[in-house]
Length: 397
Image (tube, rainbow, N blue to C red; front, side):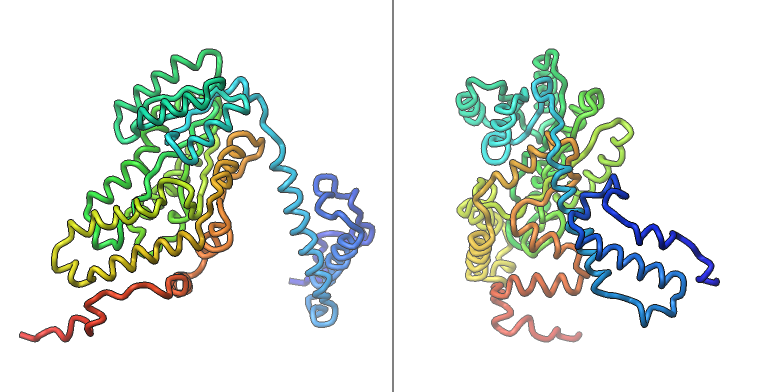
C-alpha cells in the first residue's frame, strides 16, 4: 500500500485546531498548553501516516505523551462531572433493600428514606425490624420480615411490598444481604459450608430478584447487588466465600445483558475489607474457624496442628486491622450513587484496598498474581507436618 496516498484527515484541520472545534469534548482540553500538545501530536501522527519512514526523525514523544495526558485528565474531569447529574424524582420512587438488620443495608435504608424514597427494608430478625422502625419513626421506611434463603419468605415480602406501593413505582432492588463464609482452608470445609454460602450470597439474590423483577421491568428501574473483591481474586482461606462471590459476578453479568432490552440497568458493588460490620467481626471469624476445626478428621487436624489454626486466625485478624476500613459510608455512598445518579457506573470498587490492591491485582497474569498474593501473606503459618519434614517418601510395593 502507498501510504503517501492515504488521506485519513486533512493536516490543515489540526493546524487550526481549537477547543471550539470539539463541542462534545472541549472540556477534555482545558488549557492552551493541552491544545498545543494535542496539535503537535496530531501533526506528528499525520506525517507518520503519510510516510512511515518519517518516524525516526519526526516522532515527538513529549507531544504525544502530553496529548495523551491531557486527554486522560480531561476524561477524568468529564466523568466526574457526568456522574454528578442526578436522576431525580425520589418522592415517586420506592426501593427494596435486603440485609437491613445492621451494617450497609441499615445505613442505606436510612439514607434513602431521608432523601425522599419510600424504603422497604428486608430484615431477618424481629429485633432488627423493631430497632430500625424505631430509628426511622418519622421517615417513609417500612421494615419487612425477610429470610432470603426461604422461597416462602421472599414471596411474602413481595406480597407486602406490592400491597404498600400505592402510587409509587419500585425503582430499585438492592441485594445487600450476605454472610462472610470464610472458615479456613478449602479442605477443612465440607459441602455444608459451601451450601450455606451459596444460599445466602448467591441464591438469595437470585430469589429476591426473580420475585421483584416484574416490578422493575414496569419501572425500567435498577437492580443493584453486592459482590466483593473476593469475587475478583480468590485468596487462600476464602474458599466458600470466593466461590459464591464469583458466582454473583457471573450472574450479575448475565442479568445486565438479559435485562438491557427491558430498560432495567444492573449494577454491582464490590467492597474491599471493612471491619465496621458484623461480617468481619474478629470473634465471629474465630468462632467460624473453630466450628469447622472441631468437625475435621483427627488425622487432618494433626496434619496442620492447633498452632497452625491459631496462627491462621491471627494472620486474618492482622490483615483486617491493617487493611480494613471502619468507614461504611464508602460502600453506602456507592450504593446511593447507583440508585440516584443519572449515569451510574456498572461496577463500584469500595475502599482503598479494593481500588489500589485487589482490583489491579485481578488483572495480573496468574503466575504474577500468585507471587503477589504470596508477598502479601509472607507470614503465612506452616502446617505441622511440614515443620516435621513432610510426609516422607512413599513406600513402593
